[in-house]
Image: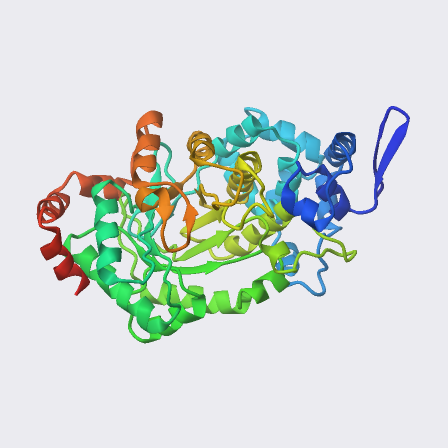
Length: 467
């Protein structure tokens, strides 16, 4: 198939789907670093016009990363649901965009369509969308998951309580956890990034959190975000594991750089399901979503694992969407794009971070994933907390499932800026959103009242929890 578009007397031609997707992408520093950005605004617009004319069916016959050497491509191709795809099979990318924005694209129809959409289709249509388009479509999509809480219901916003500590001190983690709980955070997950990636550290933190959870009957799930192999070893040592975590990417080579492949993730998911630790949720169903994944634009490029079928780079946003195919395989409880964490080499400033976050959220939801976002930036990026406030508000409007709750919005262990417990409260208040139903009931009940009472003597309370 020819990919070209004429503007005036100049015809812009694109040699492959990979190149077309790259040139059509709104500018970002990572693609410039990879040498695949449009030569000019006209070049980008021509690519977007050409992309709009590509039939969706074409994405099933041309891959951006070789099938023969990449298990993520094989997963995308082999798991494609042709019956689910049938209602849009005759559309071009541009027509698909128009349909998504129409009243015909209801929540029910979008949910039924999700297994038939490939990541490259989602990435392609997102490149033709304005910010408001990304928000409008994502808001229609509700992806609901359950473990001990129900996350993703309409009118709800959950928060991950992230009480990281620079030395993994139990008292410090416990103090930050209590602070977050008292401010209504933790209904998505209480999740700690450990300094020490070893089974003993993981087990110790999980046992402390489980003691706290049981003592105050908190309807929450816990997770320590160590490497998946470390968590599996902790599980074998008897650690009380709820969710298993792993960072994932959009190519086999990038996942290999993380020390994972699909067979390892298959093993981990089966092990977590076998524990059967989920609880009956508000609607009576038992929670069985046991995986937690994090992604981020630029991860494949940073690992030099971003090359496509012609040996040239695939754009970072398309590769990010491909990571969602990996996540979708496991029906996860939570997925979040850690959007500004990798640094300005990949997303230079607040404008690029905002666009990337809304693209990621849209693509993940369109593919049927329970998307959250770590609204964040590193201190050497051209961004500040005003940018994050704006993005937080836009994501809330778009129906994001959850955001981060970090003490003071400043992660003292990972050394980056995120969102605070108070930021989640702001978003709930200004948009009329509520916590997960099980957590909301707990906040109004006797066990939370007892937690508040005992926290008046924090030294005694922390001694009982962290010992």
